[in-house]
Image 1 (spheres, rainbow, N blue to C red):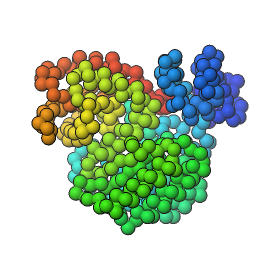
Image 2: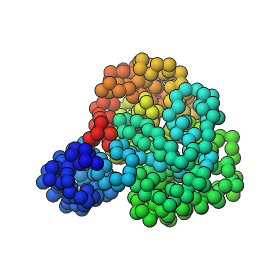
Image 3: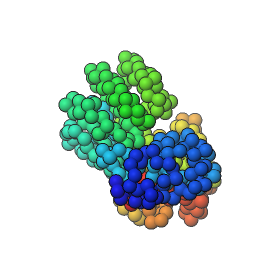
Image 4: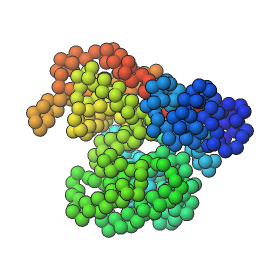
Length: 407
């Protein structure tokens, strides 16, 4: 913690106690005028900035460059972490659920590159998670720490009895439910209630996501199961103020990897503090390319960092096409171009284009769905790169917590 204080705080505050109560001016690069502006918004302390930044973000970036605002938010959140928290940089996601819900399979499927058959080989060899399993994934420079809490009853008691050890400093909680385990719905629902009770008692302002996992294409969910799922969503809506029933539950399956990619991409965009701004920038790129879908993927994590679509149906088409194409690319570091045609139900012809882009030595992958034959035939790599760079440079360069100040 001492090193963190020295890098983030003005000298006169480095040895004082109660970091959360420090005025925002204590941050190393916040001037008196900027501090006065933040106080006028109601952000008087570091804790205020860490917890309530999203309510005032638009006003802040209208007056102060968003890169500086983002760094202040990152710094305040780092400083606000309890000393019991093991993660010192990056974002933290907890996946929780009863045993055999599929938490580990989600992590593996998200990171897997290659044929589906190889993925199933990995999953077949899995054993139950014992206690806490940590892993890390880098998403556009943001270190995302995945904490999977083993779901066997012996471990659940520990999480519930010592919640501060596991949940403090969390950015997102994902609760995973096996939709095929009908005989364990009641047990899973009860565990969900217990977890929400302890996080509410800790007064954590943490977004929740519900994954209805193992929603395989050949598995039909019956009416009784649907009633249970509706009850779960209703419960979360009434008991978790940071759960939005319109966007915070997902049907996932390792047999439909686009479902996992789409769910985690949505979550990663949220925790990177960029969702609204990057949505607008992505729309500008899509319009300039005359595209019905534009996506920019992280080559290391497969996560869709930037995304815009004119119709919801294009999301699954693009994510699936991305996965299918990426499996055929042997060396991601060499330049590549993939083109495929799709005919939709209403006889609309879409051309899918996948190609690599380079920014600052890093590799990103652009996916486009377009009906514009001429644009697809005459795709100019340099022109496309310039369009994307002009609109998305700030977001590509923004590295969230990992860049400020510890990497």
